[in-house]
Image (tube, rainbow, N blue to C red; front, top):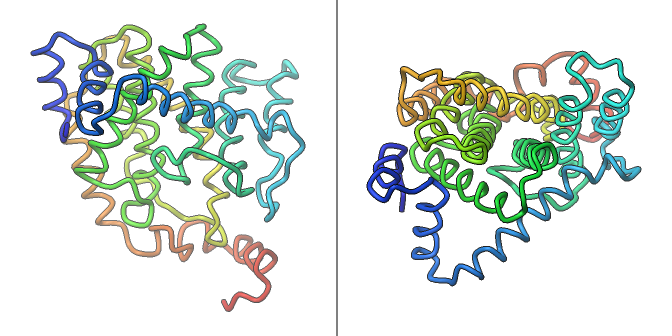
Length: 293
């Protein structure tokens, strides 16, 4: 098992291979399956991701609790209005991040990458990248191997759970996974992929987990939208040649230490942060009228 960023970079250098190529070798050995079987699994995974990134944008679906339902489509319409600040393309990426979050809230089919709370970031950023730069599905499957490897390193050495490490662990990990994959897609080095992953996590270091009413909807959908863009930002900074003075493994360790320092109220308990605001409590009563306060 590849258990650290340092080990991953060492293997890439020794074998003169990309992260995806090294990951493919290790995955096949660990799972004891053929390359064709693994690629089939990845294809099925990516198909679900792409569907969730567009589902509520193209269909009139509102999730059962109606806290955030419809916002993905609202953002897309704004993107297409010609009035957006970031421009149609970038705001469309945000809409895609929202889409998967709404599919999840509506009990639809998603890929928890790495968790349900941050599940919109990888589909939003990767599907957008594919459409914008015309990457093939086969190239995207290799990108998933990169993101999966980075996510596994984070999970092994820290946490991907909002209940344990705050939203920096869930959305932060998802953003790091996305950034690393995007850099390889664009021809970046393994070192640049991990630098992008480091930048992505540093951007949200200390982010709390404070879901209103305990539901992974608000402010979670917002963070999926911003995480989608953060992955692109981190990728461009790394590809520009900016160095990260703190290695990836140390950033992961720092995230874990920060997560352990967060009080229980800020770790998915809905007892602190925006979840404790008066308006949020009113919403909780509206959604769960029989819940004891």
